[in-house]
Length: 181
Image (cartoon, rainbow, N blue to C red; front, side):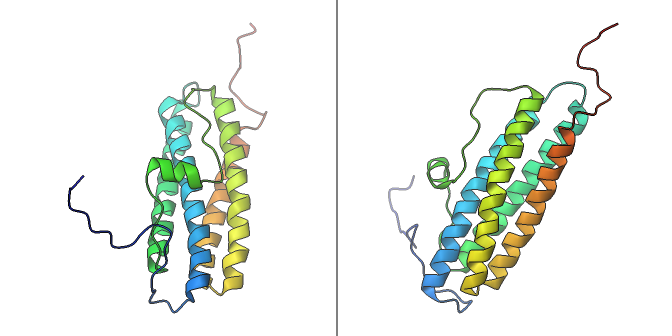
């Protein structure tokens, strides 16, 4: 790290924004965005972990799905961070800050069987969906319609992924659990 430091803006502060959104309203939107940004990075890391560790008969399809879902989470995080900046805030960053501000928890470092991993993912998606749904209403009531639209798009994507996971976890499968011949 450089010995000469010039802080442009401290985390947690709200500067002027060109969007003409009142500073107090912008702060509430920024807090919601940063919370969902932190949760999205928890989701990203869990999906990436499962992408790396998936094994078994459905390896190809699930490896690709986890990779695509992780990439979508990373893109969503970028959009939320950029919106925080547009509102005059500082996007949350760094592993410790993300963990501290996330309303959801990472499943941990252990590798689980595919079904358990996906059940953990489905639970994580459900928790994040609930937070994003609350934030849609919050920012809508603040008159921050662009952030509301961003959250609505994120909610739609999260719900789609959760539905995919539910389908993957269905009991009906062509793959045999064990040979009984």
